[in-house]
Image (cartoon, rainbow, N blue to C red; front, side):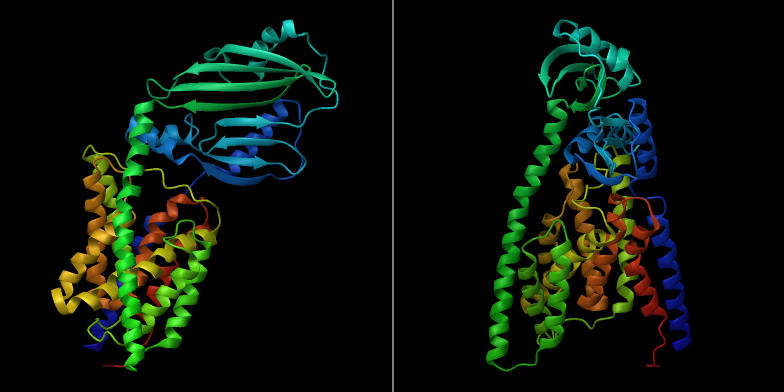
Length: 461
């Protein structure tokens, strides 16, 4: 019997690794290397040879990306967000001077070169309009699509500057959208230009309105968590008063890990130190709540892989059924493996002990285990929904995830639910970060840990 069980664990570990690698393969933000080469070539075209290798920073306009996807559902909207829409792009800064923005699909979005010491002959203001109209052909590949609407000239630093504003219509963008281009010259040399996109009010309004609705709906969930935290501290005081057995050392260690992860995360419920204190108290009290299921850590990551697959498949189903859900992942505030690690595991470390540990412990005597799980599910649903249309689809998908985590906690305990949630979040959030093996390895940390736990020799029971 022991050998059969171990063989099943080996198969489970192998299947988890295979599925997880399939989920992360090819996912991520592309174009970093291509963007550097394109930026260098564009600056050379303006007569400036940049020195050194550029520093690349990923940036984006989240609302604009989702508005493009909603206006053009499916792959067309994603291509616009990555290309002509300019919603997600790389900023390249060369050490010797020179800066550019390039979309992840390779469209030069903005460019600025250092002001040359000899910028060419100064032009009279009366000639500015015609010269700027001619200069736009030096900057962008489709000058005929743009029309000059205004030009101005001024003297600064001993040179005459010109600036022109162009409008390009919708182009490849959805009907009603507008493109603009601003170009600057000094003397007869183009030194900078940049594009902007102005979305149709209804397309952007639906996205921003839905995000505002979700922020409003998040408040009851935060209130519920606040009430739960108060209950936890009351239970802690009671445990100390009656000298019940607690796990102080384990709680302090868990709290320090949680506070550290929260300090690196970009989106946290409360300040990291408060998160750490709450998590420490909950974990320290777990021995008191003897009704909680026994922890089986080795099964948590495998369950997290299954939940990630269900989440990604659910988003694809919503799009296929005629609804809309964001495809472009949320743009992180900072790019780095540590940010992916923190953003993935901080919610798991904070929320799962509360929703799968503290709330069931306090509510099981009244409503039973699954009743407590049904109480925790709406709170978890309201914490992180996407601005999906219809909104019920987003809630339904989050509800499936919450019920899945409840089932994991029932079978593998609170620790198993933490590992499942962290693994799931890492695999789902992988698409927000650049293509590369470093980010793949970070996303697979939970899966690798689960494989080690499943394959670790154990004594026969």
